Image (cartoon, rainbow, N blue to C red; front, side):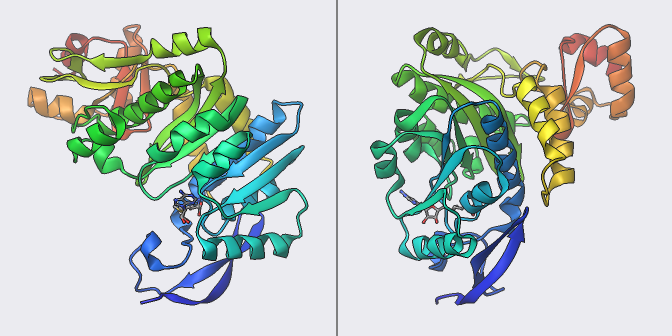
Amino acid sequence: MNKLNFFEEISEGTTNVFVYKIKSDSKGPSSKQGVPFYNPTMQLNRDISILVCQQLLDSSKRKMILLDGLAASGIRGVRLANELVGDFEVVINDWDEKSYNLIEKNIEKHSFENIKACNKNLNVLLSEGKFDYIDVDPFGSPVGFIDSAFRSIKNGGIIACSATDTAALCGVYPKVCIRRYGAVPFHSIVMKEIGLRILLGFICRVAGVYDKGIEPSLCYSTDHYFRIYVKVNSSISKTNQCMNNFKIIHSGENIGIEKIKNNIGPMWLGKVIDKKTIGEILNIVSSKKLGCKNQIYRLLDILEEEADAPVFFYTTESIASFLKKSSPRMDLLFEKLKKQGYNVYRTHFSPTGFKTDASINIIEKMFK
Ligand SMILES: C[S@@+](CC[C@H](N)C(=O)[O-])C[C@H]1O[C@@H](n2cnc3c(N)ncnc32)[C@H](O)[C@@H]1O
């Protein structure tokens, strides 16, 4: 049953770490495999966390305490310690004993001084101390850790979280979404954007409980997960401003070309990307050795464009099939809309998606 053979040394960024070797017949990431799992497909996720933390360190004058709260092998935390430049400490935590031993082994390997391993329930650890950066990277949903994260985060700090329960957030399992996130999802072409916004809405709502406001700096959907980075402010006025972005979309309103039949949300309807932060992160990319650099450039390039765009998007196929026409080329459509004075943006949610301030009537005219 146990898939453990022995350790192998792997490399990400400029960091080598030991991970458990998993037999090739094992079926992907699962806590049930009995050993801390190293998931190479999450390298992009970890690479971006290096960039976000470097940007945080660069923008601050004080020493920062960074927490890799659900660490498994500890690769993210060890990479933070090895690849960041600045004044900081790293705490790497996992409640699983085998993980903890592996984290210790990886720390010893590098003989770092500014790094510490913990073997606690993350919620307990968060109730014991304050952090400037809290990374929550669970199997599935992060909801069980968000409350403690907001009690623990320092003013101006960043909470990062991944959510792999995209089927719930995208409306494949609406009851699960309602139960976990207190929000009604919408299984449709725009389901990924709605799912990401439901997750952010949940985070904004929990922040509000503690009179804290969030500024989403970099939130995206990729592969099989959502990833969120929010800057946290302890200010009542900022919290109130934030809550203005926490809204329900009411039945009868349009999302893309669809008129919705039931209320959807509540969700975050404010910006999900901060253009300035993306610019600063883009400046850091060239100074780091990262395995997913090309993918990062592509993603950040679209996110930078999308930062100013309105919420929700159309896809050329969905409009074409609605109008029973063939899909126009994206570049021609963009050119036509721009020529008429409209703004039009690519979206990372879909390769055939676009966001625009042109009304649906104008778009339809162009298709016809
Ligand atoms: C998806 S893995 C983390 C992957 C890791 N961040 C990486 O980049 O490779 C989730 C980890 O969370 C740990 N975990 C789950 N619940 C926890 C809790 N309440 N407190 C601490 N660790 C927990 C599990 O043991 C598992 O190792």
